[in-house]
Length: 305
Image 1 (cartoon, rainbow, N blue to C red):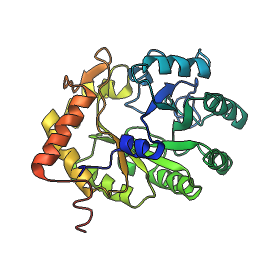
Image 2: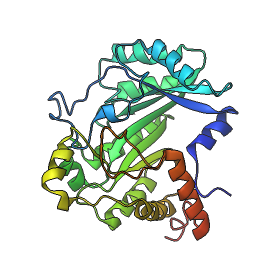
Image 3: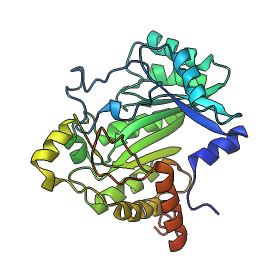
């Protein structure tokens, strides 16, 4: 019995073989940077801290996909999802978005799209279009929720409230489109109870996939500048401390939600803190081992309501 609902295994069961995401940079910006919603972006954000080398916006989408496939060539037999990752990947004219998405889907090994975006950057026309694509391809919209606390969202200059996230998730799910959310644990102003309450609020939404990671302080961000002046306002987790919090979070989460990610490790040249010196797969191994030791599993406390 698995301790949690693993998204990679969900995809493997659905398609009968390994499925790999390939990051694609569509050259997007963000309404929280260009003045539409705000300027400067979210306080924690520096997109350069997680982009692979092959993922450059000046390259055509098809070229990025080919180079991504070559990057993962050690797996002889697998399918691919084009992952529009950097910034807000629904922020543009409908015609431009359609061109980029369909260029990605035209590759014979690409079976679908994962699109990272903000919940305030989708509308009914675009969602209806994704619903049409979902009749033929695997489509996953990943919304940056980050926190369910409006107080926190204001502190990090997110530019939308949690009600906006709930609306986008519900509208997406109603159209038969796979929907995911992203949360950061450890944001300023949030105590343990607040972080655990995020799980309860996710349970109330028609969510398919959840990605979680710990707060990191990244160079060249507004948060890094604030951290330098006001470090007392931040609680950065020790590794084992985060694992214990994460386990309790997973226990509160309903088992139908697939978990795709638990941790993020930005490159050393971008990372200020915390520096755990552990690779993602090593973290997952430690997490799974600890869950087995404790005999806990996803949804254990969800059923105890």
